[in-house]
Length: 278
Image (cartoon, rainbow, N blue to C red; front, side, top):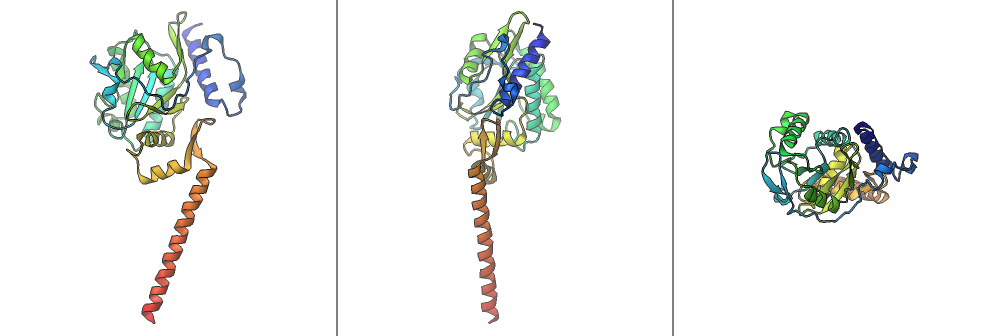
């Protein structure tokens, strides 16, 4: 199997995982033997080992814990920088969602990329990071420091420890010299627990915002954002945030209170004017 074929199969796996539960026939098709067991196992609430060491894109030795010190949510991306197709699709989808966010990397949230390929070194991580900062846009990228979106590399043991804890299952294919893996990103709480897994290769700004507000435990976002979380719920079937029947009832209740309040205020003002004129 050549690298292009493997990449396409990984992409199909990601799409099958995305459509799983949506009633589509694609999810019912058997996977090729090379991709069986390649998936993201959702482990909400799981704590990651933050003391695992890595090298960042500058060659400095760091630990995951270094990026959990500002008490803000963290988006973790597990991929590898020489991936021919799928990793780029995931990062491109993440960039699209980030551009629509009012939240800024390094201010409201932290972003960390970790390579699962132990052969990759800081030089490659640095060039990959530079390319994505350019794609993100000068206005956002110039305000970022090396700490705000590090591209990390490390040993097979250390990368595997993070991936296994996160439920990110992948496999090295010697015939193609590539890795088979699924598509998705992890949104973590400020203390390193998995709050939400966003699957696929597209991450709408609304989903990113709600996932970050949810993971921040009230640390970021406006009162409106927290109100939206009462109405919107992450649906594991559609892999998106959407209104629930309970959410619609809550919206109806809020609107009822607002309308009733406006009516009572208007009636009080009319009564006051009548009292003054009388």
